[in-house]
Image (cartoon, rainbow, N blue to C red; front, side, top):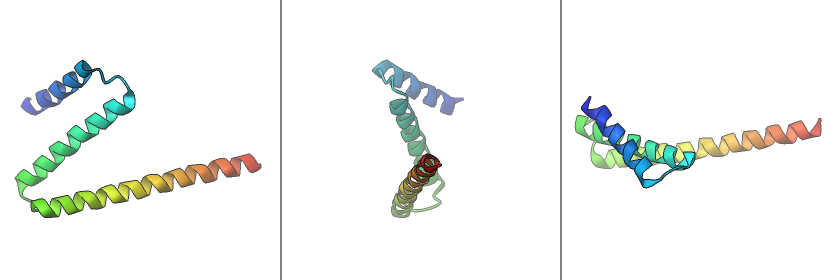
Length: 84
């Protein structure tokens, strides 16, 4: 219950600050969840801080590559759709 209260408090604070845009809100929620994930991993001592940072950067790079590939895929679909 305490952990869910933390998340609700963070969300309430975001609404108070006036973050109305869906993108801003979703980015903030993702940032909160990522920080909690990192905190949990660090507390469990699964990896060291340096290893965690390296793995996080690798995941971010892979996420960017996936987004780029998805954009290229969408562009190809729209180009193919225009030809027919």
